[in-house]
Amino acid sequence: MTTSNPFLIHSQENVVIKNSDDKSWVFEVGKDGNLWADFLQMTDDLKVVVNLQDVNARCQINCAYLTNKNNKINIDIKVLHKSKNTTSEQHIKGIATDESRVSFKGIIEIPKSSQKCDGRQHHRGLVLSPKAKIEATPQLEIWADDVVCSHGSAIGPLDVNQLFYLQTRGLSESEAKKILLSSFLGDLMPEEFSDTIQQWMDENA
Amino acid sequence: MTALLEIKDLHANVGNKEILKGLNLTIKAGEVHAIMGPNGCGKSTLSAVITGNPAYTVTAGEILFKGEDLLKMTPDERANKGVFLAFQHPIELPGVGLAQFLKAALNAKRKANGEEPIDAVQFMKYMNVRATALGISNEMLKRPVNVGFSGGEKKRLETFQMAMLEPDFCILDEMDSGLDVDALKVVGQGVSVMREPKRSFMIITHHDDLLQYVTPDQVSIMRDGQIIKTGGPELVEQVEASGYDNF
Image 1 (cartoon, helix red, strand yellow):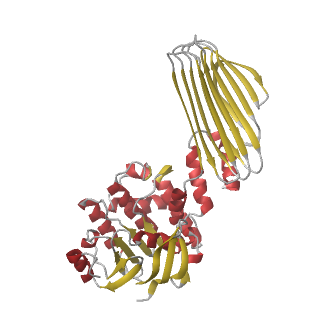
Image 2 (image 1 turned 30 degrees about the vertical axis):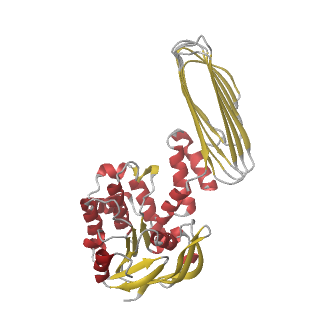
Image 3 (image 1 turned 90 degrees about the vertical axis):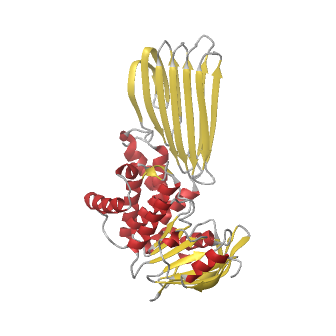
């Protein structure tokens, strides 16, 4: 994997991609349609709009960001539940080091006519250096009353106690960080991105 | 017996508060040395300072391990020289499998000793022998480190890690707090099996529970950041009979 901001569309049943230039995507998911896409952002902005157009449309957007140096990136993900009975999930996790800055904005919009929708958004960020910064703005615009929605965001440093515990077992600070960072990302990103992620860890942990 | 660990006039702080106030202690190779003292006397600070916990600052004194200046080393360098701490409160590592973690630790030690990494088959054999001896199931080996285990199981796992890494100097920090008799036996058994002429143990405790399963060679009484008395196992009985006030 050589591209710096890889993506992978696992599933696009009844999905129309309206526009894409790798940085900006508009998806339209039709009746019973299913979109599942993964994005890994390192240097570029990402803008994703998903329109859930008709009943039983669903989407899962997974996004990881790994930023270093003085890179600044914006990640905007917007899911519009345009029809009743639609489902969305957004999982966003990322790590910022050096003087990099990440601004994440996630929107779930459910108009009044779209009852029985389920929209979820979860974001976690790790800040590895004092000059790195992650900002998250989760935004829920829910006008329907019979829906399930959840969102959560947590941003913090690596746990010093975990780091110390690993070091007392003989692992260097850098090895210990790599283990903790890999476990933080977990299986959010697909196998196809693992070389890119490993390389980033080797250079930045 | 030669000295494995020598601590001379050690002073250490947490923030601005002095916890260790001129502590002297020598532990010889092959010795099981109990450190007994009331809560708050600085016992856990001592283990944290020996292992290089960055939350503590050494303001004066020295620690020699195998004749080398331990305070100049990073926590992992200390570990790879043979220092091991069984934690009072083992840290949970979600998403980090125990077997994978132990393999990484074992290979870090081998690398520090100029040895090749252990191969997968050899590692499984090496691990399974020790797991079976300490009643660690296959299912436990697959789970993330310390996540979702009871207090007793966590201490059993610390003992297992100690058996895996075969350190020359094992610090057991309050391993007996909150342990039932069965778990105490496992920890005691782990120590007894590993006892050998070149390996030393420092058992930190405030009562005699674990010491009923492991008879120490030496006992030091700690109060207010200092070692105030060192003697034989008879000191354990004195503590049990009349507490720490008479020292």
